[in-house]
Image 1 (cartoon, rainbow, N blue to C red):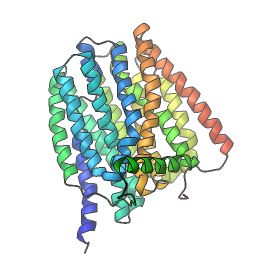
Image 2 (image 1 turned 180 degrees about the horizontal axis):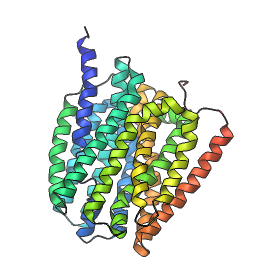
Image 3 (image 1 turned 180 degrees about the vertical axis):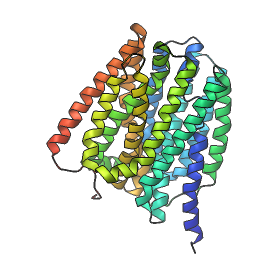
Amino acid sequence: MLDTTTKKYKRNILLEYFHMFFRNINFTHGIWAAFLIVRGFSLIDVGVFEMVFHITSLTMEVPTGVIGDIYGRRVSRMLGVLTFFVYIGLMLFTTNYFLLIIAFIFCGISYTFESGSGDALVYDSLVEIGEEKRFMKVNGIREVIYQSATVIVLFITGLLLEGLHETDYYLTAAMFVIAFFMLFMMKETHIPHNTEKLSFKQRMNDHFIKTWKVVSGNKRLLGLIVMGALLFAPVTSMFIYAQEYFIFDGFTERWMLYFLAIHSVLAAIGGFTAEKIENKVGEKVLMISVPILFTLGFWAALIPHYGFISFIILGGIEAMFYVILFDYMNRLIPSETRASVLSFFGMMFSIVMMVIFPIMGIIGEMTNIRYSYLFLAIVVTIVVIILEITTYKKGNQKISTSEG
């Protein structure tokens, strides 16, 4: 018989699956940029709002990660849901430029409260019951749930909610209420600390120093963080501007939503098969081949009227690599700094997004969105060439192992 504590940590994983589903029944997922454009904002404005989101993420990732490590990952995630409600309210009830800036600040804070603490709570729940080796499989299931929820949202939006953008936000708020309840029922994991007698400011400083030592003192971990940020940020930028790109390519908004949905189906397959692929081909092959596949995908996306095929396939590749990369990273992170270190990845991701996303908006406004995608393909090519040269120089040295 399992003791009560073990049962609660096992239940955390089940609750996490439900939480992932309802949190990602997000009807604003594929339409927020279009929603703002319909309200009279330009592509440059959209780029500015996204930049504000990532500046907020950049500055708040590690502080909110520290809060998650000190006061609890469950607490941090619940705060993330509450701050997202503020974002929804402002998006619905104002068109004031300044207030929309505030909205994206709250959206960014919401993201940072979740980004490190989400994975940390799941991984350490598995640690508590001695099943951390299952993380890649569990994370793959989470990715399937995330993408399945996205598919449901996009198909419903395309079939029933096309153009009803305000309804999208109300429905999303309802889903987040359920997601909050799932978090409320979870059990917090044990986080070892020896700083209870310190003040809040001292605890924050002490933990930040520990986090920096973990990241800077492990070249393999730092390499994974940098690689992930440099590859995932361009894919995210491609996804956000996809709605405008497909419409420019002659497709309707409904077809655009269907393409995004099929993209998510491939992503679900990629996440589900990640563990099997990693076991079959191994780390060395993955670290060399996947960046090359990213590059080919970005160039293929430029093909007129057929670029959507590459966009869909990239969804599967990105999800598969995401699940594998985060498993590699978690093996190298001590439990007491897990949320903060994973938030450091989010900070690096935001730095890249903050640079390339506004440039894409400016290029798209001055020329057309196809040239924005061309810019993205050039950036990814340069990044991958640098990554491949670095990997080649390292020879047979692994980027991640079970060593500390």
